Amino acid sequence: MIPSRIIEAKREGRELSTRELQDFLGGYLAGDIPDYQMAAFLMAVVFQGLTPAELDTMVDLMLHSGSVLDHSHLPAAAVDKHSTGGVGDKVSIVLAPLVAELGLFVPMMSGRALGHSGGTLDKLESIPGFRTDLPLDEFSAVLERLGCAMIGQTREIAPLDERLYTLRDATGTVPAIPLISASIMSKKLAEGVRGLALDIKVGGGAFLPEVDRALELAQTMVGIGEARGVRCTALLTAMDRPLGRAVGNALEMAEAIDCLKGEGPADLIDVTVALAAEMLVLGEWCEDRTEAASAARELLASGGALDRFRRLVEAQGGDPTVVDDPSLLPSASVRETVYATATGLVQAISPRPLGYGVIELGGGRTRLGQDIDASVGFTLAVSVGDSVKAGDALGVVHASDQAGAARGAVILGEAVELGDDDAPPCLPLVSHRVTSAGVEELMEAG
Ligand code: URA
Image 1: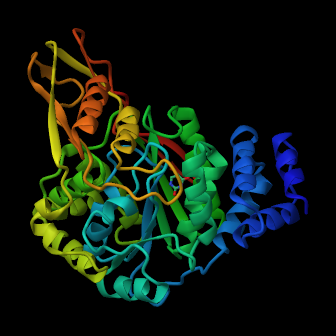
Image 2: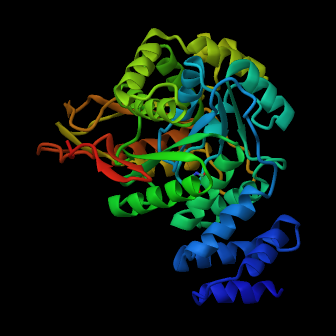
Image 3: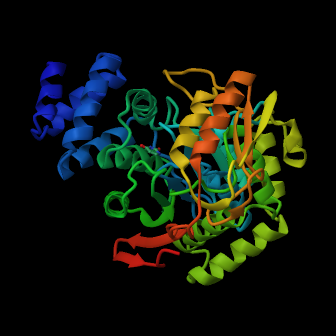
């Protein structure tokens, strides 16, 4: 195989054979194909896409690049959820202990920050000592004991996704339906779950902002899972504004802990409950989504999943006292409040600039493997539609120095758009439900 010929073929839109994909992707994993050739290939896929046959091959190669887990010995179903990525999305941290507390098993494999979107692994690692690289035997032991465990792709499980994911983050090759689908579905299928809830973000902070592209992504991923015997449901959820009020790793961890105490923001609770209900039905915990949602909501409101999260943190090497005292999480040395310069209504809060803002403040990566500062980010004091007076606080920048705080203040001030008119309608928080049976529209824009 001549790697540049594979890249050229994809660049010209020719369908690659199974053998060509095996050689190219396998060669990359074995270290025979360098990052620069893989980056060129990925960029060709961003522009040319993959045919259904190529996508199937890529999913299978990525899925079988490491171990595939089997949880059939567990006394209840193993289920999971994955999001396509957004800003302020800390749902996984709340959802895993919540669904485990209700009796199902959640063997969750997550990712790091990708492009402008945050990553669950980086948020978890903001807890001092928390290990997301457990070997598989330890991962399985924590899962059996606590009903949930949270790790990243490793050399043992989904290693090809681990390599491609990191490379895509640094090379602008994230937003492509086949690459997102293969990345998510390969690692989730490797977890050996019976059911999978997919959170497909839609709106300006999503990798694919338009509803029709988000629906195509949802249908593609559901199709991949169902064809391999895993029941899948996808919800389209709003990412035209950040989810919750905190953006940045440690800040989001603190907000997730609040949510587990029953004190989270309403949008974060609603998305978490909707996804929990899907997981509970997929795992045959009950048949009725409304009943499942009520159980999840009640448990969350009572703080009943908090202790499971505390034990999970401890089991994975983290300091469990942060769960009771989130002030022990890394905190930024400079905090600057940003004030409204005019009176008006909040028209929009753009998620993408805030996501990139976290990277600029040092909380995300600009090159492979870079260390990050977990403490930096933004906390919002307003929501879309709020009325503010000149001088009211719009939010707080958390930065490591004065220059970062000044830059963050500009970013936050620009992300929160004020105007005199009524705010235009936001996307519904949960707008569509996609299963193998088709697409169901849930709510009109409001
Ligand atoms: N999450 C993933 O795991 N992979 C992607 O490509 C996007 C979001």
